Image (spheres, rainbow, N blue to C red):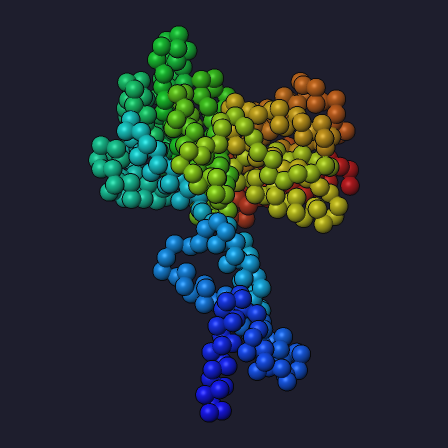
Length: 419
């Protein structure tokens, strides 16, 4: 009889705990009346944990609870001993995957869009940017071309004039020199020369600037080359969000756009916001982004050197110097207003780029600041950090000395601030 009584009390206690959300009441409390207060407290917490975990287990195999149910579950889990809720980990997306997603979504969205270039189809692209697209969209939408940049670039420009929206991939922008007549004289100038009656909605994209160990003929930055030409829009992404948003905006634009990517960034993962994952997300062409707020000096850069600027800013912050880092995103049209507003705040300017110094992007920024009202706010001359004014050497130690490094940016900032 005693055994049956204890079993009945256990059943009654379990029912009472489930009914009251995990509290120890009724017969269960009577059973523990002689226990020490700490033991009662531990028992109550264990009961609460068990109830919450049973609820959680019941949720498996069906859609997660929503609204008030989700709130109750969260509250119960927070009450459980040893259980803490945290925000979901941010999604990491490589630049390569961001570009692939953007191409996929735009090919699906608009049947006029097609991709052509060397090895973009059956080989999935030299850098796997077009991975899986040929199998999904077929030979008419993803087209392998001969090794003839002048030829397939001309085909792409003609298709754009006829109303299609080609994405023309160069295996490297160094090879675009073979087709620069088509890019400048055919694509960039036709809208103006036709009084606006012929649009050329085309995207020229591919890796730009220095890679690693590919020497002088494959290491040039073309930002200043194409940024010099009216009629073109020129964008230069750094992060995965930049790459995804700028490519989608470029494909939808009615003007020819040159998109200068960086080979060394393709495999780098960046956090991707929920907003940036939307199929309708674009990064407006002509709008810079402040990657880090600061008050002492403005660092302006584009493409891979943006990461170097952020690294330098982190080092300098430990020494009490707060750098504001601006990611240009677009070379032409340049968002000089954002740069001016930053210079007014910090009173110092350093530009950073991987290209050569003469007639470079940094030179243009400095000239525009000097010509505008922000010049009156400068407390010291603007400083440029650029690639060395020589053809890129092949030897790694020499190559490293030709490309701006974090230490070069730190040196330039200290020189500007006279510290």
